[in-house]
Image 1 (cartoon, helix red, strand yellow):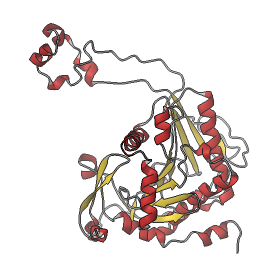
Image 2 (cartoon, one colour; image 1 turned 30 degrees about the vertical axis):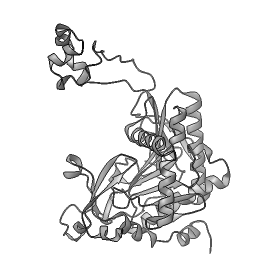
Image 3 (cartoon, helix red, strand yellow; image 1 turned 120 degrees about the vertical axis):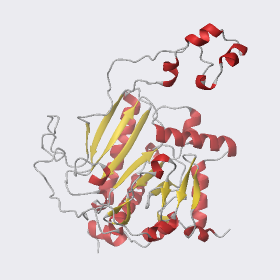
Image 4 (cartoon, one colour; image 1 turned 90 degrees about the vertical axis):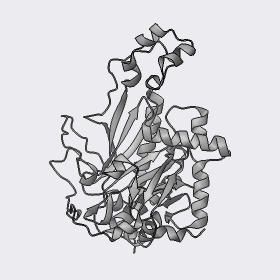
Length: 389
């Protein structure tokens, strides 16, 4: 089948990681834009800001004072989204657990199934429909460096490697010293992504539960492995390496693609060539440098795309801190880069209307996005950062 026809027709694409569909409408890029315009962002920040809560030596909004750190700096978020210690919550339990779809059952059906009609009428429907559960956890902030104005795109490979080592130490420490099940490491870059402080940093939220996004991916990866006897992302990577249509960056250990099922205009999926389960398997300096290299390459390409401080959300998906052997075996470390910019530094993709009420929709195809990113070199810029010729 000639897939180039998809550049011109509206169609849907299947996302096996999320078990959902994406509507693709490439012809919509021809429509005029009279919507919101953003100011093009340039990096005009100083190396140090005395008013910044994250700069070395400054006092944070919660009252604590930062040390005079020289590399990365990790601290517990002063305004964590979850609490490590809190009262337990025990939701009420229904006395007829087999009536799980109560609203669809008729009383006579329940009676035929063996339930007493009177007890059926007494079942608390509220406990079946209004559910809640307590969540415990701990949230961390990781400052990338003491520099107030250095994003990942501005950092050298050794500097990013230090960040990778910090992520590993955090994963290892939380796994060893807490009962939590999950750690989600993520970065929101830019005010457009809700970042409240411009000092480059990421966060790590640890929770007693496995959150919705990684849980959905893990469920589908496990089902794929059970059905086909192989790793979903290993198989997908093999397809992308064969076709080479959506690859935007590659080194000896990692591949970055605009995935077949991408929702955001210039979304990229970064996959490890080796089927590692967690970032702890990046054991050598070379392993960490190659990971740093692919992150740097994507960050630089984004900044070069529209010649702006390119906003995005980035997150690492990997095996849970605690899980079954089956969960561990089905996993494959990958990163999602989810940027909102669509046609320029001032035009964003909004998730509204049809996306919120029907299904995800994108305009340019992933192949078109990949071609734009493929043409943006990162090597010369990186040599300049690292003092090369």
